[in-house]
Amino acid sequence: MKYISTRGGAAPQEFCDILLGGLAPDGGLYLPESYPQVADQLQEWRGLSYAELAFRILSLFITDIPAADLKAICDKTYTAQTYRWSRDPAKAGDIVPLTTLEPDFHLLELSNGPTLAFKDMAMQLLGNLFEYVLDRRGETINILGATSGDTGSAAEYAMRGKHNVRVFMLSPEGKMSAFQRAQMYSLPDANIFNIAVRGMFDDAQDIVKAVSNDAEFKAKYKIGAVNSINWARVAAQIVYYFKGYFEATRHNAEKVAFCVPSGNFGNICAGHIARMMGLPIARLVLATNENDVLDEFFRSGIYRPRTTAETHITSSPSMDISKASNFERFIFDVVGRDAATVRQLWSKVDTGGSFSLADGPFAARLPEYGFVSGRSSHADRLATIRDIWARYGLMIDTHTADGVKVAQEHRLAGLPMIVLETAQAVKFAETIREALGRDPVRPVELEGIESLPQKVEVVDAALAQVKDIIVRHC
Ligand SMILES: *Cc1c(COP(=O)(O)O)cnc(C)c1O
Image (cartoon, rainbow, N blue to C red; front, top):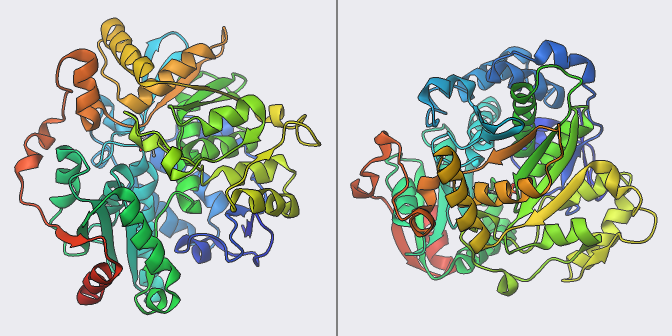
């Protein structure tokens, strides 16, 4: 399998060659040359363990790692021990257990990994793939990132203790919850460096960008990233759409709908690809919060990214995006994989503009992809958390609540709806208290993590100070 850029200006590459990089050199995103067709394999795949299913699916996309090695990586990644924080501990072996709320309405638990959010599903695989490829090549990488919560901790838990990998993670000092700080800063591993920046998330992000723009420093210190445009993350996420489908259906003639709380379009992009591969998905329901750029697109055909200043700070913060970084992959398919069209559309996006597919040649094609959408507000979130608690005695997090709210608006009789549960309630305690007047339930092993010793260096929002830390530890 070779990978091509959505902007058409990069030579086709193998999987391991794009694994450690970010954007393609022409500014586009990598996608497989074609989507493997698997409708004939569904019968054989139904009933496989998660690790085995991951191996079968990833084998179609990763053809430059020997099968036995890829199998070992999948087995090591998807264990009941790593994904043990299930609501029902007896189901931890399922990796992504399905909770049925009522006939044809389910939650797929994707947040049972070490940081209690769905990003662990892909990031844990990435950690093992990085270690494998770097060992094989005798190379090292220094991952530099900025986080306001979920991504940074998922990256640290995935990369902790891995050979040839160091993680330098910037976070805004004092802006994360005590639980989030404890999750990240209490990691004792020698290859994890937490850097708290006196400033806001954007200040931290600007420093990361400045380092990435310094070609000499970047090359000398082998700076890399693990952001959501990484193809391997999208590939890993395809697996749980298959698993969820098998759990919610009895035979392969049945169709389902998935509802996905969305921000950067990474998670639902994997659902789109699963559907393109032949998984019987009738509907992909995209849920946003008050930052409704994507809901606007699926309702109007107009994609109008917002500026950071226009982005609302909400109680489902991992969906607070103004520009959906993976969206270009979907549009590449919609425009018939014509890179020239993508270049033309993104020449507007990259200069702060917008585009419309509402009229013109692609308007008729858009509905063929099965997408519908909706948005949710803080009040909706509170009402949904209360409703699910009252009716089923289940506590859901704020992002999942956005999904449940929008899923309910798009249910069709006889079509099973699977809402992806993207985080656990304990991560968003403040909103849970507001909704339910009580603290969220917390896995026993995580009691008291706030009082563990923490390892973090505090710096000004100054490029030189961050570079100095990297230089000192390399
Ligand atoms: C990252 C994240 C999302 C959004 O996922 P995208 O892939 O960016 O669309 C939703 N919920 C939670 C809890 C997340 O951490």
